[in-house]
Image 1: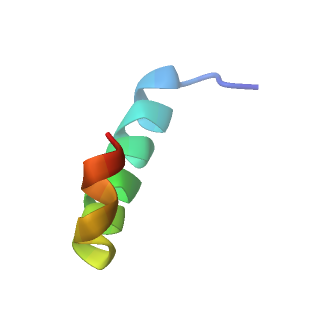
Image 2: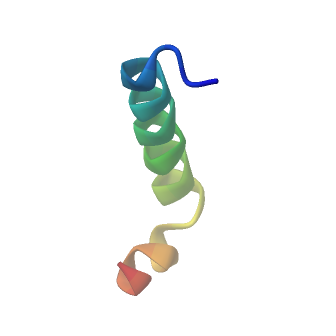
Length: 30
């Protein structure tokens, strides 16, 4: 599991960007 941690990080960053676009109000939690 997790043979390519870099790919996982990029995937998380992409999801984070999409999440911010879908829920801009959620950025206040960070």
